[in-house]
Length: 227
Image (tube, rainbow, N blue to C red; front, side, top):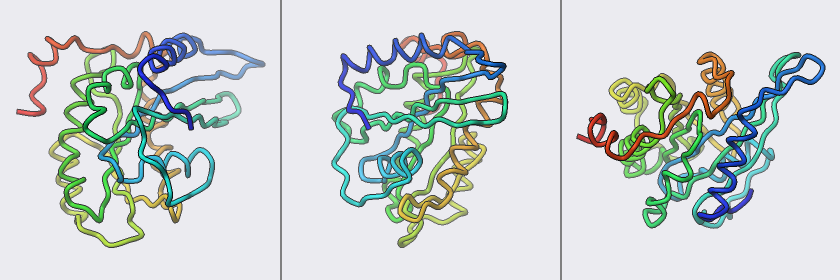
C-alpha cells in the first residue's frame, strides 16, 4: 500500500486519468484501469479489507491511514478483458476530510464501510454517502456504483440486517454485504459486484469521459442528500 499526500495525490490522479483514457488492445485483449474508493470512519477495517483483497493477507495491527493509501489488483476478467483496479483507502479521521475532493477524483465506484459491531460507524454512513455523491458523479450526472460493507461480521453485531436493508432502500444503494477481512468473508464478492456494475454502465471510453467532478456551487444547488 502506498501513502498519498496532497502533492502525490494530484500526480497520481493525473496519472490515473491518462492511463484510464486508454483501452489497450494486446492480441485482442482489452485492458481497463478503474479507480475504486474505500471510505468510512477510522477503525472500521478499510485497510484490512484492501489488503485482504489485493494481497490475500490479514493483520490486526494496521496503523491509522494518513490521507490516503492505494493498492492495485489485476483481474483477468474474461479471455478478452483485463481489469486493473486501483483501490483507494481513504483516511476516515475527520482531520483529513478536507482532502476528499482530491482523493475522489476519477473514481468509478465506491465501497462504503462500517463496523457492524459499532452503531456509531453505521450512523456515519449517511455523512460519507452525502460527501461522495456531492463530489463525484458519472458524466450523465448519475451516482457512481456503490456497495455498502458491514465489516467485522466475525465478531459481535450491533446493527441488524433490517436496519442495513432500510438504509440501502432509502439511499439508493443496490447491494450490501456482511464482510470479514479476518475470515475473508464476501470480500471478493463485493468487489466483483462493483466491477460488474462499472462494466454494465459501459464505461468504455475511459475515466475522463465517464466521470466528472461537480463544481462546489452545483453541489449546493442540486444535492439534497444532507438536507
